[in-house]
Image 1 (cartoon, helix red, strand yellow):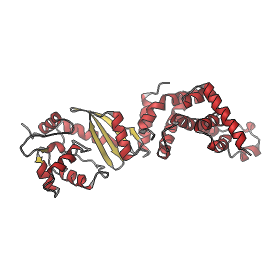
Image 2: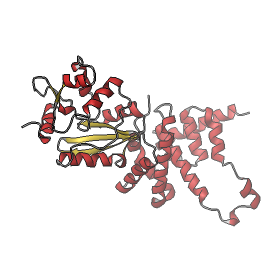
Image 3: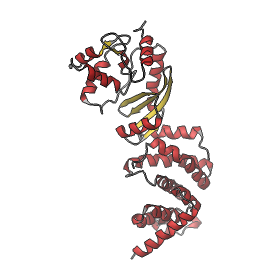
Image 4: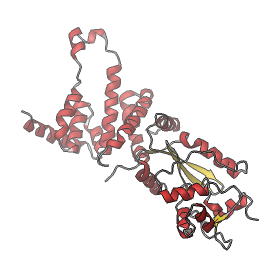
Length: 186
Length: 151
């Protein structure tokens, strides 16, 4: 018997409403392709480009618990804010983040990263200095590469000392698109 | 082998669980029972020790819900003598699940689903990922084993 879309939706909603999920996620269409947006009850925990669902669900389950289910409710607000950002109607995100599983150094660097304003860029070295590790530009690069929450934690605003964009886990084209959207690139 | 992320488990089993419930309860009541089945599965999911026999496991949950729903429907007064209605506290399937706890998983599921939940062998075969013949064999070897072990 074919399960109706309404019944499926009802169950997914009830699962989230009853607080039974370790992770709720939704696939979200954006100008940069489909994003997987996921949250725990502590906050937004992942945004992934080009997510291979199988792999991404396994990885979320390993990190946060097996009860990973596609359910819109817990990530609706973040998705709305992403839409507004891409439409040029939002410069800062007002969402709680769950980064508690990250190493202390990564958290400190991402904390500093979150303070880099819309439309501005910093170099890897500057960000390292702001996180009180001025010689750790390379380590900061690694933290950016593994940023679990791109766009919201704006690792696209971190560039090389020469002014080159250098790298982006989601691909350089996306980094460029985001900087262009923010007016940081002409 | 760990259980898969719940999304995978749900996608794998939702169709046949709904089919099973619809057959037992009719389409309308099946929808509520469907939601309850997977909510119960979600609650218990973190306690699973491994990812084996998940199909039999979720069928057992669905079968239990079917029985709960049948029990909840108030029996006609003429159906039960008064003294029975008040002492009938422990249903047969709960007793059976307890007795069968020591059996190998497939035999245990077959015995509980057949004699505790009154599923037919085709349904049990579907739940176990095999067929009616294999289900019948598992149930009867489970029963033989129980006879041997029981005092």
